[in-house]
Structures are given as structure tokens and as C-alpha cells.
Length: 134
Image (cartoon, rainbow, N blue to C red; front, side, top):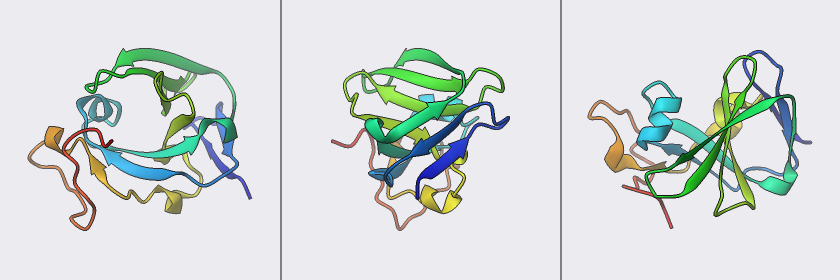
């Protein structure tokens, strides 16, 4: 059964053929901008298995790691939905708030934890990685 998701307004939908490779909470400054201050929770999928329908606007930026990134948003409602690194075209990052099944959204680690604010609430049972994992 495919994994499905959508933006807030429903203009962009997607399906994924396989479960995520990993899911992590990211505390980098870029992700905190995208999440209005908190961490983003991101599921990493094989790019070839993600099928998107609808109009997605891309914003290009350079991450704190130096990686060139493409960030995908719904063109109608602005929901942050996807990210992809130019250096890793084989995977796509999906913002887990867009997944229809929220049980798939449980992170396995906190990354860029060194960038988190002092008030950050992290699950202490998860690994806490200060920057970008290898």
C-alpha cells in the first residue's frame, strides 16, 4: 500500500512506493525557519519512488553544511513539503507533517542539535547529533 500525503490546501499530493529510509528531527537554522521556530521532522525516501502531483515551487539555498538544496513548497498555500540536496539526487526529504499517516513520522534521531535553542524539547531517548550525520 503506498504512502500518501498532501499540502494544507490539497493542491499538491504525493505517493511513495516504499517506507522511509530514515526519519529525523532537524534543528538547523534553515529548518527552524521552515517550521516557524521548532525542528522540522523529515522522512528520507528514495527519490525514484516519490510521485508528486500539483504545482510545486522551488527555492534554492545553501544549507549550513554547505550543501546546495532545493526546497519545494505548494504554489497555492505555501506548505513546505520537500527538500533535496544537489549532491544526493537519489533521495528526497519529505516534511512529515504532510504525510497522511502521522505514525510514519516518528524520528529516529535529532540532528543539528548544536543549533537548537535552549528551550528545545527533544526526546532524550533519541540520539542527539550536533551537526549533519555522515
